[in-house]
Amino acid sequence: MTADLQTVTLDYLGCTIAVSGEAAHLAWLREFLSPPFAVRAGGPAQFRVAYTTEPARYVAVFVRGPDPEGRRLACFAFDQREVDYPRWRGEGDEIVLFDAEFRSFYVIGGASADVEIVAHRDDQWPRVALMRVVREIAAAHVESHGALPIHGAAVRLGASAAILAGPKRSGKTSLLFHALLHSGTALVANDRVMLHRDVGAWRATGMPTVISIRKGTRLLFPDAFASQRDDPTLASLSADERARYTGGSKGRDDGALVLNPMQLGALAGVERAGTTELRAIVLPRVDPERIGLSLAKLTPDEAAERLPGALFRPASRLFYTRGREPASPGHAAAAETIAHLVRSVACFECILGADAYTSASRTAFSHQLFGSAA
Image (cartoon, rainbow, N blue to C red):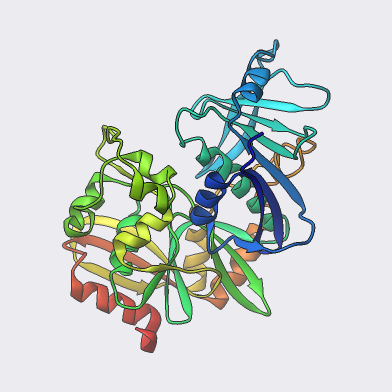
């Protein structure tokens, strides 16, 4: 291992994860995950994650070869699906998986850590695999303690937050960026939120993700996105590394822009926020036959019927239980939780029509949701 090896302990709503690796990798991870994940000084951690790009370690895992039976295991929850990877030969009780996207291995239950990510060192993109492991452990932990995962973005204004929840292509990202352009806002989450109760109040904590800004959203806010380079590599670099970066990578063929949460906040000119009391849930819907942006309050029964469609798939438990319980727990208690939620928090439908993203609609939207805070 290199002499630059360090360890940082991250705390997400009481789930503590000690992450070891080179200083530059940890600096990017802290930047990506903060402020929902806070750095904790001292004390034991519940989980240990290691990240290595040592060539000798990579070769040692690689030469073991794939699992002779061709088995696969699911280990990440994305939107409404779990992603599985092929098993690799391990030592003893280890579970080893190969992730072709990052050309990296996940060694679960090994001697050095609960989870070790063994990555190539050709570029920094495998850092995203490290972030996903840390995030999946934290998500599984808080879900096992009653948190509800929502597929949604969230914005804070004043002391409270509104969640913009719904499936893909419901207009969440465009509406989020529109809302963030209102003075005094902060970014809570871009695509995934954990809802949890604290002293009787509902609170929202973001679960940071890589952000894909579709070409259509970029065209809606041309001034904001004009200066951003179409280089996905930048999302895997820390702010200091981006300042020194002189390379160049081709943008995506579909015109989407790949960002990390810090980059999104910088483009909107806002700070990022941690856990915030929840004020409202907004269910957006794109309707090109309509004009402008309209917000209508839903009854608790209407909201309870629609909100299940905005749930994020429960986290995999593979990393969380070190492979002893790979099955996802599902949303067994979600109906009861949603019933309480929609009677405690105001819920709205937001219809996004043509010419929805004007300064006047942004002001009206903020006033309807946040009242005097706007």
